[in-house]
Amino acid sequence: MFPEYRDLITKLKTEDARFERLFDKHNELDQKIKNMEARIEPATDIEIDVLKKEKLALKDELYQILRKANAAEA
Image (tube, rainbow, N blue to C red; front, side, top):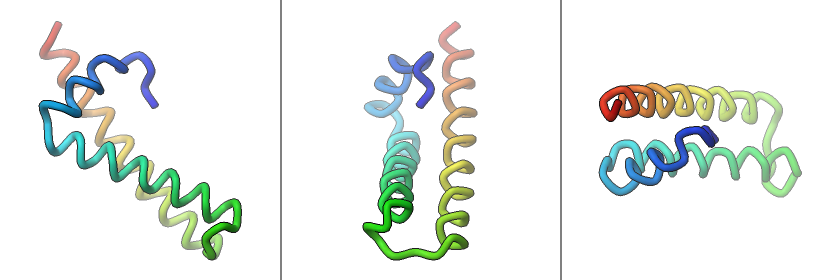
């Protein structure tokens, strides 16, 4: 996710607790969705769609933090 911000992500994960929490939650949702789609965890299509929307909202929030932090460093 966001390879162009790899170094900034590493920095923010150590310096910004909110960013780290959001990043970890995004990764947890990603794994949960993969498990549901692979039928490792039971889920309906609606449940999967809800989680995908939650994951996308987290990704959008992470991206906004990254853009703001990147602009501040420039």
